[in-house]
Image (cartoon, rainbow, N blue to C red; front, top):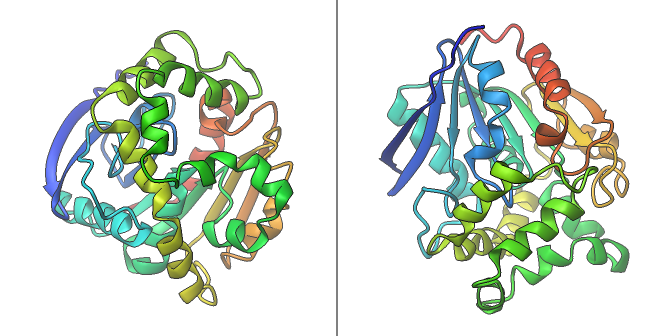
Length: 289
């Protein structure tokens, strides 16, 4: 089997120091992680995709080894981070594969920079505007963290020194198999979120919610024009079991494929990587750069 060399880089783009990993050659495919993760979330996808594509997996603003500035967490700015990274790398067009918070960035990128995008994958994500418009007591109970993380300062205070328990809750509660993220994988995330500023950075992502909703409402009438694949874990109570995801994404884009991943919760790329990889490779087929 072909060996995939994973290379770490740091560059300055859009005014911040961005860390990313890269592997493979071919048409560029950019992977945007979600919460509570980093680029490490794509460890199962990178080797499979890098056999055909140039795979680039950054840590988003506020996450991992990328800078965690005090501002700039609205999704337009974070999409501009991605655009600036592509500019630095000399990439005119790319395919975006995204999950969770990364899908919010990717969706904004698809609206703001459609000419830079060939195709889009969004994974286990209900668009920000849809959550805001449908929010009621039932959704609020499932999305308690979405609201709690927006409280100034308090989450950082409570999580400090308790990062392990905080992360264990999410990875157990959000996965079909509560032990899916364990051992070395769990320890990698613990190290990432114990780093100075890491929890604050992730909270800043959530605290941009009002700006994100305003941006999404302003161009809600403009559909995503590139081919789009929406995947979600069939078993996650806050996404696939709470929303009609096929209808949600057909309301967002004009050319949409949808697929629920069985025996997966919020992290299908980690729980069912072989199935996800097969769907990604099928969808990316024909992307020639």
